[in-house]
Image (cartoon, rainbow, N blue to C red; front, side, top):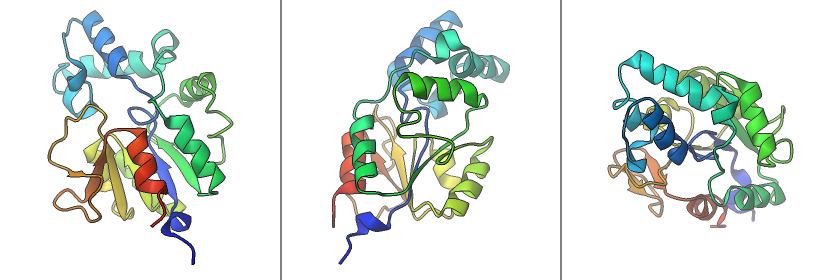
Length: 204
């Protein structure tokens, strides 16, 4: 009998899940005149601190689009180990990102050795809005999706298993990843790629 591992189709967000921008956000915010802590760097928190909206949009542009800033954020620890295991198990997986400039994203993935070894034109998609992620996830048959934004997970109605990546432990209203069924929020919470590995790849 095949395990449930074999039935998965996994989707990943890029920024905040695969790439760690926390320290880069702290440093860049200082350049914009804002003093923030690492625990305030998740997108759903920092956008309320860097105001007005036009300033935050400019902050995002510099962070993600300008090469002198965008190409120096490190990977989250454990990314390659888990992706290697996923490939070895022949589990389908995809990257669905809301990066506006996909060339910069691909350059960053290439720099870290993820492109084209793990991600390429066949399994990577760049979209504009959270709702576009739902459209793509549904078309791909995604069964498990990992994102660092609750608002994105909330619109993924077709995805039965939604996982919030919370490495800084700031979202306390979600269920810990060890729970089999997730109450209230409708999704699990993991704090590391080791937990992603254990949640997705341990045979049951």
